[in-house]
Length: 466
Image (cartoon, rainbow, N blue to C red; front, side, top):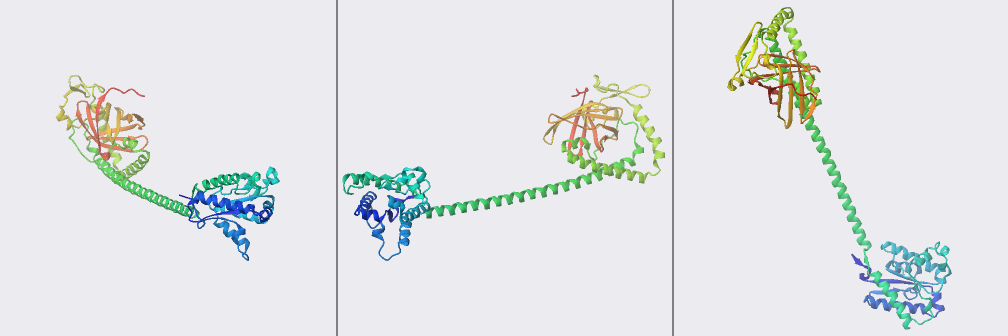
């Protein structure tokens, strides 16, 4: 940042009325010369690079006056108007004044006019008069020098020279204040415009990248959803196939379910519990798939066993009577203190030794073993899952299901058990089928193949209901 005082060539403009200068025998021209000598000395400049422009001395005969005045003002960086009634009324002085005000605004300043009131002007003493005149209002608002007491003195007197010195000090101080040239302002404006353009380009680029990223993520989500839908569809078809195979062998179900061999099929887990964790969207999709699978199983069953109901009904009634009346555990909620199970048939109790831990891990529980209230508490997929599961002898189940301490609604269901597989049918629709095996005299493990989860349940008393 530079100053006006550092310009290679420094020019000021001395505005006055020639008639006043002639009337007072050149005193205004002498005043201009005194100001130029003092300014030149304070600025450290010579006549080659400093000039206080005066029309009488600068305009040669025959030249266009208005063009020369405008050219001189366009080169000037400060303006000294001599204020007299003639100057205020002169159209030439008014032209000079207004032209410099435009020049002052062009170079970005508003402090380069230094009026000298040489003779009293009545309009300056009336606010109503000078406020409506652009020249007088500018003079009144600027800090002017009152030369009226000195105008009859020679410019070389000590008093006049001291006043000139103070005026020139003020001019020099103003010229040395920091200043940004029009060229520098233009360069700064261009740089700011380029910066704004670059910022806007970066913003648009970032916006385009953000939209592209959002589009990419949506595409990935849609692709994952399609893949999951396909996987669920395949699992549903697999479930339908397994269920159809189970239906094919329903007549071979043994009424005694106590000593079943271990089985490890890959089967879908109870869907209702996992849908609660997975979310409502997955729950609706799974239900549709499972209902579709159930319809296909039903259609397959009807096709294969068109006349089977007449034969199957007596067989199923016979199996049901055996399953419900053959075995009952005397105590359902708590294990026997002697480490033995007390089983009761139609006539008298039968005792069976509780299996040791090695045997229990490979032993499939019987139907009566599952009846009671069970508890499972473990981390699943990074979430704390606590379940109280009540399995009743009347073929119904209920849950107290907590995920990260928050109770989650699980619909009641009906259950059946055969050949090491636990089957649930939920009131809201859908079903689940999964393998189950005993792991101790009062514990069992259920495998949810769909989610790769194995839940370990232990027998407990009825939980407190919230």
